[in-house]
Image (cartoon, rainbow, N blue to C red; front, side, top):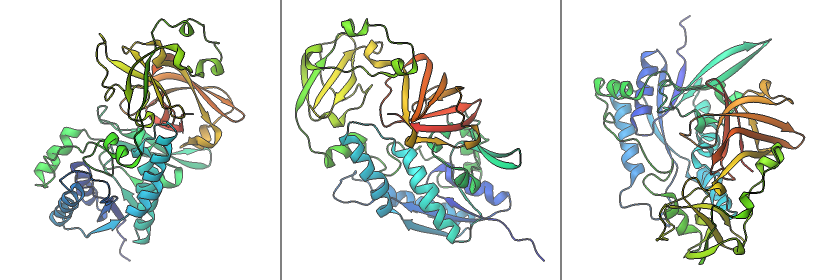
Length: 391
């Protein structure tokens, strides 16, 4: 009886990382199928003159041809609109800051796409993410570990912080243990059309558009005040109660706490820590958004990146928003971890304090711009073990 080759469906995005992933899997003896996900084509939202997904799908097809693997395009735009775009607008309207890339992985690439792949008889799906996976034995049970990529500049484990054991069981990350320059070198060597292609910027679905532009076409503009709060305001002198509850308290502002320095087009277009797009001059240091009030349509800003209103030592995650990649490590006792609240942020020392209805994440050092709606992710050494939506 001949041994059956394991079948892998690779999400070919038209970029260099997924192209090289497909090549490496082929070298490792898998039967590889390339699939391009079309996630967006809403003509009511003008994206840019170029049509990035057409170009990308063409590049993906050329790579598949070069490698001699079957290729097809799947249109996931309806699912995408429902699960990602609608959710994002709902969150922005509430004055929160969702992360579309984390959601795209949880809802589309490792859910809708994974199901399509399994229907094609695949044993695994693979993506060009810079992260690694391994499997360990805990007691009688196998657990899959999600590990940071070897290339520390490129580690993308954060974007996968919402994956489950079931999803990881079916996933391969072929480039997680090589560095970006090596990935480009392999692409050149194999003469893949994507070798020199720049890494895609912008949202994982919309290609070349910036988020504010996208939002402005969907959420209506309405003028409101920008209030500047001084760094020496008396509220910053009140010492915080050193409990997790106390440390996670947000500053709440009212109009009387500062002076009006300008107007904006809608509080829901702004996120905490944002610096661009305020269009208020005359300050020595740049202004940063400290808080937004979407009900009153007011933005509170402070001067300079060391403004005390930007910093907090703790955050709260509701029980329903808590996710353990390694459920066996969830404990009712405090747990020391390293954590980040956004992609590319260096990992910082922190402690999880579990409570009845959720968990506090308390950092050793104050963190800048902790925004509701973003994902906090926590690690033990280089393993991402859990995450949650910041409340």
